Image (cartoon, rainbow, N blue to C red; front, side, top):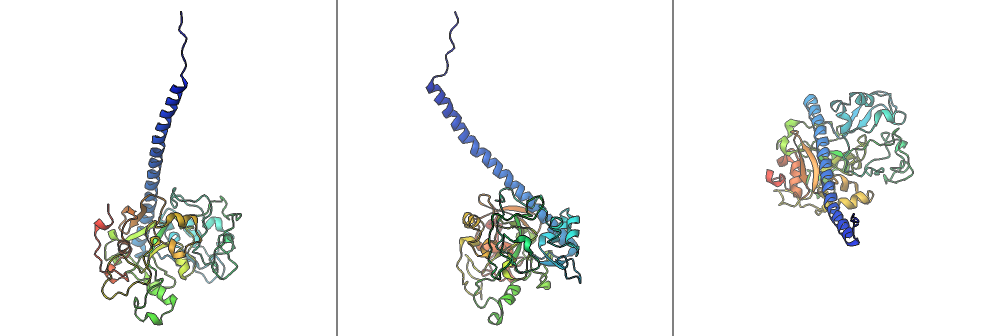
Length: 380
């Protein structure tokens, strides 16, 4: 006589479901952590490769590229001639993109009619953790320049003189594949002299804002400078007095936008492709340094107020987004002038970050220029 097979009771079914739920609750976060770690590693590899391209450029040219420089030199007055280009454009030949650089250096190829030939989306320039599902309005671009034609309408208002960005969700990007040339990586432009007290520069009271901006761009203060407005600010590896292993070259910035953007010489445009340090400190002042006028804020630091800034791209002033940042937990990836890369903790002191951005602390304009940096300050 066969026994009837008994099915599961309701209690047993609930027990099984509960066990499966517990297992899923344990596995899903673990999978997420593995995925996030893999993305962080991939982003570190990206910035390392960019660093190698910059190093190769410096090795051949004996100088680093400027955050703004001139190519396609020509007597032609068309849009394609005498292009103001970003540091990323400059290193394209050393990033396996020789043909793309030749397009940029061609005076007959302009932004309006040849955008697909000048601004494709490039593998390795974006981090998978970054929020690039929709256009992130670029608050750092000056619309009033022949470097920014009407193709950017919808990201910024190109018809007024206030430089205030506008966002039109219906705007269709001009690129054939509808994927703009985003980048997640920016360059170390050093000191930005916003809100500084009198006495940081000699004869500062007699200087215009533009003169102060250029005066801040020295070899001791940073690496990537405006080589159109200040050609003598060229920086090379020999200027790394503190050592290439203690000077950041490039790093992540979750709010960087297009690798093609550089704009004009004014301060707003400096933030399109760079990160900077400000005249503020959390360490004792160096001898003779004036007391900072601006108080330390979280937004000066790595990832400070990151959630607010990403959700409200128009809320901050431009300088608030010109810093190291990422969607990784705990810090951002950087590469140094000697080629080694690191996940840099967001918990380091601001004076330590300034020290890592200045090639020569002792001759820089850092408020705490005499601070002695040690590896324990930033290596975990």
